[in-house]
Amino acid sequence: MRQGLLSIRARLDRAGILLSGLCALHCIASILFLSALGAGGHLLLSPEIHRIGLLLATLIAAVAIGWGALRHRRAAPFVVAMTGLSFMGGALAVQHGVEEAVLTIIGVALVTLGHILNLRHAH
Image (tube, rainbow, N blue to C red; front, side):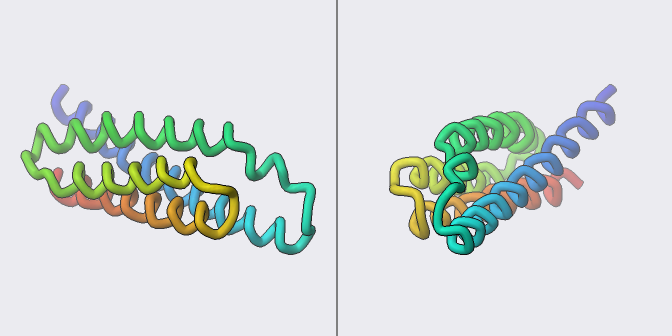
């Protein structure tokens, strides 16, 4: 049973890494797409996409990294991931554009690093 729970947590960490990568790709693709077209990309920049992404990232990180921190008793993955989520939340407070993309990419990189550290400390 315990091994099964560890497997679920590891899968959540991997899902968090994938979600972070998709988020970064979304940010970069949105900027490139809007630069190429000049307009019409309002769906890619919809605040709902960013809010839902942050909610998913927060839920996955809370379960996977929180669970891992309780297990391996190391704060670093949790602190790094929560710092990243803070950057991502800050990105929601600025105008769409370069500033938002930079904050989001820094955030997803830190959340990804938190998940990676969590996976490493679990073994």
